[in-house]
Amino acid sequence: MTKEIENIKKEINQMIIERDNLTKKINEISVEITNKTRRLYELSPKYIKVVCPSCGGKGYIQEDNRKRICPSCGGVEYLWMVKYEK
Ligand SMILES: [Zn+2]
Image (tube, rainbow, N blue to C red):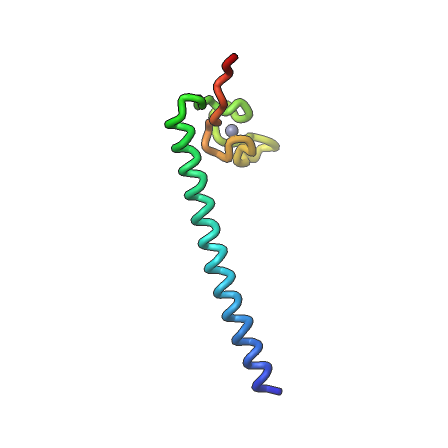
């Protein structure tokens, strides 16, 4: 019984480590996707960079004496838009 309890604790700890490593890897991949997407927009003549209309290029929204990261631009102060063409 005690042996089984110890084994289960070890397995749980091992799984926690594995989960944390996977979470870290997923976060790294997400950052890389964001960076490559921005680079793609920079290189493409189809896109233009504009000041974020939600925060006016501040990167944050002021409300109730508190600043919070702008939900539209995520704090980067600008958005990439598809150029209007007909
Ligand atoms: Zn913004």
